[in-house]
Image 1 (tube, each protein chain N blue to C red):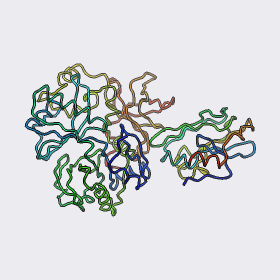
Image 2: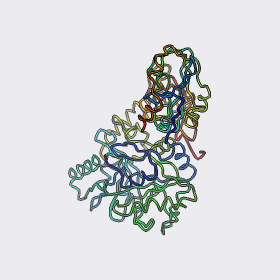
Image 3: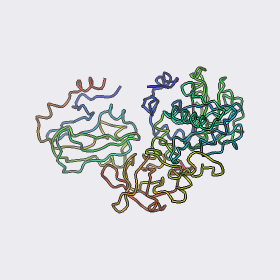
Length: 126
Length: 363
């Protein structure tokens, strides 16, 4: 079974979102990393980049495929997980902790309510 | 979608499946990278039943193969096999195949999803040349297993009375494995020591598969999916028909000139002779990334901003930890040591032109 954390929000495209005040940290779910397997390369967004909800922000490549990561919220990229450049496998090993992707400064708090709850996400992947 | 007769066993072993050329086959069981390294360092077991089996036998069997492939099959003794290609009149490749010369005729192994095309072509050639030979497509009636890796011989030796150390590269014979009669050949698609077993699907193939896993237990054997099969062959610069022959390629473009036996007449020979004289515009070229990035099928290759080719197969090498690719590149730009750009999703990734293979014995 894939781990789903109760304190996070989710998207249909398998990103998780950790709301931390005015910022949100984003990564891919345990379910997503299992589907991808063997992540070998991550292309992170540039800090300062303005992104819209649902827009492609980075790509994750596994041995077998390339997957787009979509921004769950509108806002500005304020941090990226630089460790992933040398150790992309951290996403497989620790998708919710060491394998986080980027942080975004939330522009429209109303969008938070549109994110999936853990229960909703559970239904999607079961 | 056709499945392997071993499908239920793969499910039991935790396989994730993929559609490969119209067949639902295991993509991986645990992890592609882990399976890849298992084959390089220990031993792995593949179900490759998606590959075809065409039996060719009768008075003119060797004659048919000599006309329809670039090999003179009349010089291939019983007990030997040959890797070769089948060409159209214009010199482009229909398929790359292995044929084995058994005591009662030949068994050809074409690629997945190509068995009917190849069998029909062979029948057409037979009829046009008035040959006396039967061509039977047995693809659905056979299971093919590949046992590959440095410990493959020790693994298989445990369940067979044949002395496998006597089986030379590309040789073949019939023998018992786990009490089941198989055609065994010392062939494979990984660049490692390895064997392939062809066995009738109505035999106890579950027992055979399980017996091989049991025999290889002490060596760390694992079942291996098509994901690792692809990365293993790419590191050794082996051709994948659906990638490297896409759009019609001749063996001269695909660097398979070494397969051509020019001393006999075969379909496509005139076209190849012409090509040889005029030279080809593009040739398969081997690129090793200098920058981080993963080249993939269809990406453009550029030199100083000018498009000079296109990636036919690419990926990240589990042994080297860098991106590697095979690409058809304009022959004016194929100098080993030169650095070119592969355009990976809009980004320039520098890659050095290298000699094949990407991975030797060092993994």
